Image (tube, rainbow, N blue to C red; front, side):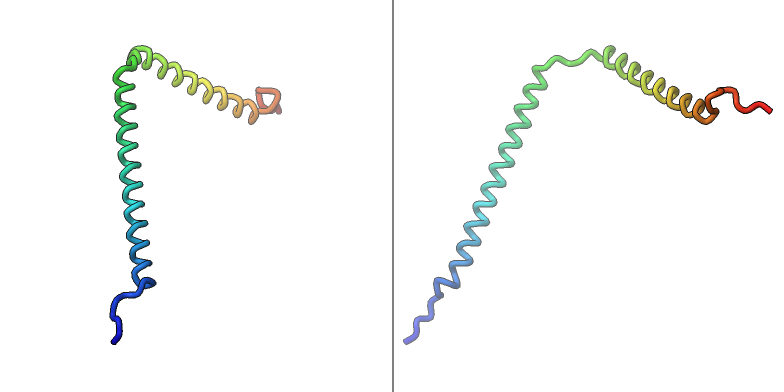
Length: 93
């Protein structure tokens, strides 16, 4: 009589794949939980932190905008002076 049961070599691959899948799912679940805990902790820190003064923020934004505009004007002026040459007046005929 023949034994019609499955061989170990046939089931070992399936068992190993199933275990690997379970480990991967457990790892992903742990990572998700860690991310959620970190987000909650960050939110608690934000609640306890001082909020910046809106007036100061607006003033800083205006200041940086003015500096950017000044830098842009200086670059345009330098490019224009370079185009005119050393004399600054252009060529005389």
